Length: 113
Image (cartoon, rainbow, N blue to C red; front, side, top):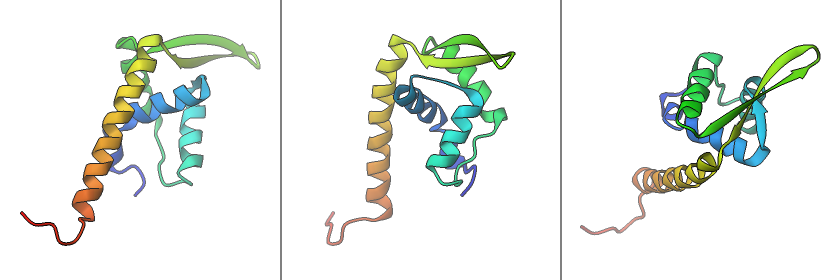
């Protein structure tokens, strides 16, 4: 199930949810957090992550802060006010999608049409 097409449409929402919970994060930290939460089932590649982060930034949903850590510059991403509002909307939409998919995959018996 690793890197399934099913996850690709949810990547932005996953990123936004993590930033909502953690305040600010850098790219590698996001990939490792997803890997840990899903017990290695979902691995987000840099090739998928950074375009998504740049797109969210371009949409005004993320701010970027650059900090010096161990003599290296590290880019941290955090939600803007607009991003926080949009996260709530996207999570609600994703929850509705999951509920509908569960209904389709595991329909309740005795449904009449």
